[in-house]
Amino acid sequence: MKKIAALLLLLTTLPAWSQAWIRYAQTDSATLHFDSLRTRKMGDTAFVWDLHDLKTEAKDASGRAYRSVMHATEYQCRIRQRRVLSVLLHAGPMATGTAVEVVTAGEWEATPPDTLAGELFNHICE
Image 1 (cartoon, one colour):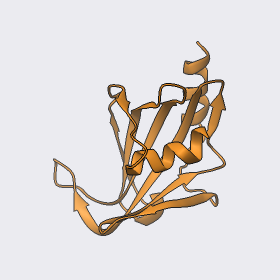
Image 2 (cartoon, rainbow, N blue to C red):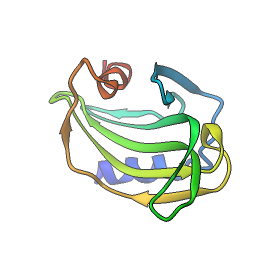
Image 3 (cartoon, rainbow, N blue to C red):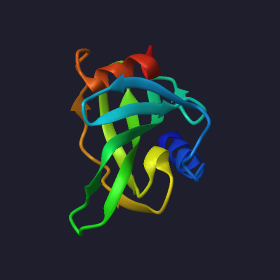
Image 4 (cartoon, helix red, strand yellow):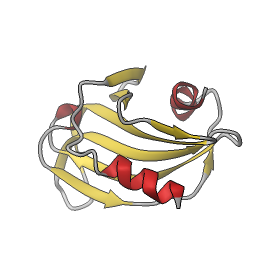
């Protein structure tokens, strides 16, 4: 029940744009940030908004253009796993513009230290 309450708290903090985006990685296609103000850690569980600010416009399956992607992600810190709870596609950079939600509630997956997900894990869980 605590996890559900935390998720609702995390999701009710929209609109997504925040002054507290912290850059944690850079790739050829995007700059990756997390929202330090809306990161929540309770015991071994952590919730975070992960923002991928794309360098060029992309299109979803229905042809809608987007420039940034936000993931609501849950981490199990002790066992080093994560799952994506929700994905928001934004028309503009840095989570601006019209958003389309893609509800995913994905499967748990390992978070190896030498990956981008591992980089975020280090900021959130340690």
